[in-house]
Image 1 (spheres, rainbow, N blue to C red):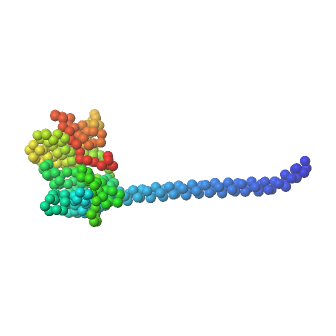
Image 2 (image 1 turned 90 degrees about the vertical axis):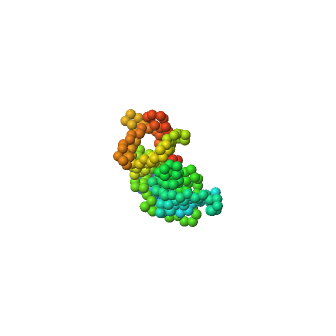
Image 3 (image 1 turned 30 degrees about the vertical axis):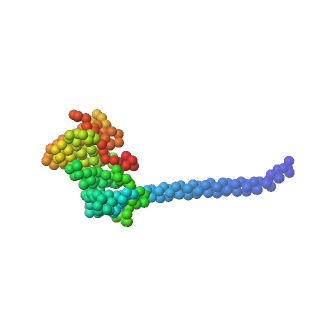
Length: 279
């Protein structure tokens, strides 16, 4: 018994020393794990920051829209945009067979890679009030997808659009308010209507309406509100340049691409094509 007690006493310092080493090892392991966790968290934050910066860099802004230049498609059609607000559309280069249309344009907004333009002269059957047209840039900004026209590749170099091309209050973020969602060209779906109406709503609160029956253009300012009893009903108040006030009531669909009159004969209007990334 004494021998056992003595052996225990002799081994006690070794046990204490081993315990201290285990504790030290645990502290080192814990500290190492904590440091590793901190490094991992820092790496994640850095990666997220880098990703956000990359997305921000990839997004087009009002100050960076490399559209001024010449764009062509596989059929030889040419779209040219200048910083003097002039645009040109050509179906080829052969002077004998090529068709050419020219006009002016304005920048109405940009949402990421999607850009909204207002072109005058594209549809001359609506009193030259203009047509809204969406286009989408590829990541390398060397190709644009023009709604209704297809894809066009950059021929040579392009420069950013001049500030003078912008419409006041042009979009800088995804449209959210009713007035912003209304911006665009709305056309009567009844092609046989004796008095079809085409309506343009601008981001600066201006509007234009073309009446095919009288071939007259009405202009002024507008305001839009939801109905008090239904989120599917909107009311648009028009104030013409001559001071006359009109109130139009419509039913709207979910993505705000269709309006139907709720007073008198039912007439449906559809909005210009909108990229899926904006919806």
